[in-house]
Length: 571
Image (cartoon, rainbow, N blue to C red; front, side, top):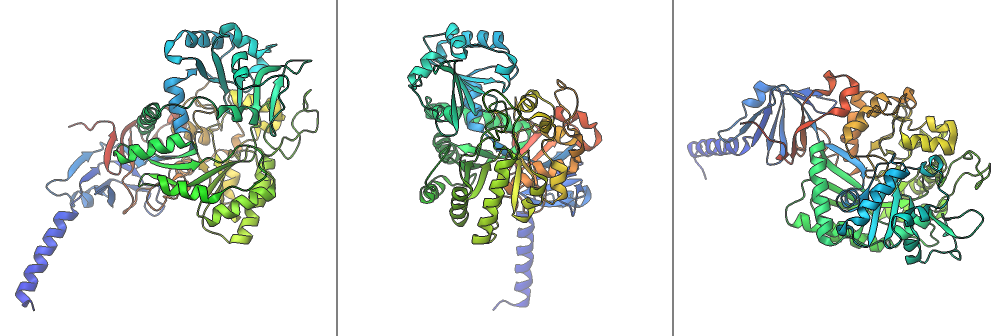
């Protein structure tokens, strides 16, 4: 037994050792630290020990913790906050698009598109397939073209041309591509999709809508593993520069899962990535095989790749293609008449069956619901799941839920379901103008942010990049959520300005709520002791600049688990 003297010596040695071990690796001080933690909203300094936040407080108290090896970083008054979490993005698709495809702006006219496609045809690196886009949703309304396929044939009849629209739900093909996929006058429209025909004939005109396009999209040439890896690393650098340290990929193909797995193995992933496993697109008469998804979840799960997520599509988009399910009719047109409300891929019963089994199996489900009709049906299905399963604690997500019946607003909080506000369209834009062509003045009442917050809904937000938006820049979305104006200052006016929210509310949606969407809110999303040190340092304090300057925000430093992954610290 130890003598009292020896016990005292042992305790002193233990205390000294513990203090040495507990000395922070990094202390960031002399800053304006916005924590997104209601119990301590602001601080001056934060300490990081072994990739986690070990202390938050005033400079004097935190600096006392420094050891001989602690790195001190003077913020010089700059704002520090949690890293952004984008809850709806397509990083793999966006990286491939930027690096390898033939791209033009959403607002490009016929001459610009023809010039760009001609340049890609002449580029030997493009090969036999010219894949790219993205043409605007109202392109053919604004630019009547008698035969879209012949328009592309004039540029090249010898290469396959496949161009997506800005929503990534519709496609434009030349004759050679149509023939490659055996789309001809005898082809029957797939359920939930349309092969648009030349006037007065059954000859396809080159435009494929909804399921007709998606079915072909998944048969396009797949990038090699090397290209996939390069695309992901390219996007990772871009996101870190924007201050994004966590993402939820809204639909993850197998090749991306494989690339993430290898990058994780090699220690190259510097993001938390939640992957939404793909399900069959379009109408379905049989339930999902949940066991297959459970196996895939286990196969690819790793410390930074979170695979307990899955995506289901209920409808299309409320653009002139009129493929989203609405509660009241679209504006009349020659094809659809005066009473058309769109359609849904799945019945309420089929969706309920899928959600019941996925919820029991521990999956968080993101459901594409772009129309208020599909939102209503999906909430009905979730309500039935809650009655049968009880509240599992897993939060269902309704993606693109910008149109919501007033009667459905309180159901989100009651059912533990989150409206997924994506993409960044809380402002006038070309795609909003296209939507109004289809839905009329209802298009001006889009994204009821304040109403949902008043009903205590957990709103999550994402860019949906590369669909509909030119970049994954979150600061554009944050400014637009606060102002409801166009941050690019290209389109005047505001979009339902009464739904504007405060900067504090917007930042919580883009940080802590995004972490919750990834099931990581216990680890990420705020500056709190015990959470991972995913933090960003901004050039300017968001609370001390005009709100119309938020979109111009620059991120000086990005830390992922305490490691500096973007920017440089002055010596």
